[in-house]
Amino acid sequence: MEKKNIDWSNLGFGYVQTDKRYVSNFKDGSWDEGTLTSDATVVINECAGVLQYAQTVFEGLKAYTTEDGHIVTFRPDLNAARLKASAERLEMPAFPEDRFIDAIVQTVAANEAYVPPYGSGATLYIRPYLFGTNPVIGVKPADEYQFRVFTTPVGPYFKGGVRPLTIRVSDFDRAAPHGTGHIKAGLNYAMSLHAIVSAHKEGYDENLYLDPATRTKVEETGGANFLFVSKDGKVVTPKSSSILPSITRRSLVYVAKEYLGLEVEEREVYLSELEDMAECGLCGTAAVISPVGKIVDHGKEICFPSGMSEMGPVTKKLYETLTGIQMGRIEAPEGWIKVIR
Image 1 (cartoon, one colour):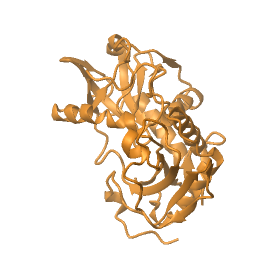
Image 2: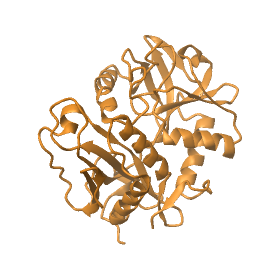
Image 3: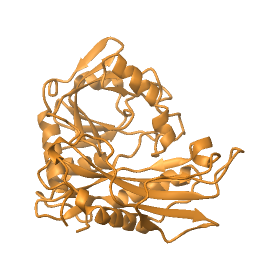
């Protein structure tokens, strides 16, 4: 298929409307068969559950053109499982996991002309989401829902190269104990908006959120998990019941162990021990790993020796290995790559 006339190398990380999107509706206890549509407009009642009580969950993943010319997605089965867990936590009907993957395949295939070419630095971002649609005025779950998938071509997260981030320790909590921090709900991101806007006003790139119970342990940022490298070369990731289980972070942990032979610790990480770390990164779908150069704790600067000016050596190797797997340059573990074309 002929590609759209897009300047792939100058794409930003924003929304570009593509030709098709997938839609399925839940009513009277079951999901309909679903369909692709050209209509990008969502029409719902003014009293819809999503508008009144924020009953919505979502996912994010990408489609890539590999070195050998195939169009693939990366571990969509984990996105399907996470969306199911998120939906169940908010008393929403889970969209079947096999149908989730089929919807991804259909939507990407229908928008093949928007999948950036290999080597362009761009990818096709995929956004599946699920929300309550029928009128709900009393506080209770909706009875009807819509599941949708849209795509948009996006450029590299790092425009003009990798720039190590400066992060502040936030006075806000990202999640409540026994709350919804472990699921990908829209409400979690809404509550982080004030914190990120105020961080930007103060000259910081992101917030480091501490655990809500004791405020002594590292959790995550508003949209990414942390990954540290200790001075003796161990890969360390925070463990908590209120951290979103990042698919990228889980994949990087596997790569560290099985591809690079590194020792990995998934454990509680205390703010007080960050001075003993050599490298720090934020991991997520958008950039895989974003290097962190400095964390500021109310005026106290914690600087990472490998990361002040560029990505640290271990972080860089992790990044290169995982992106190599995604782009087909390195053989992937079984089941990680879903070929679409």
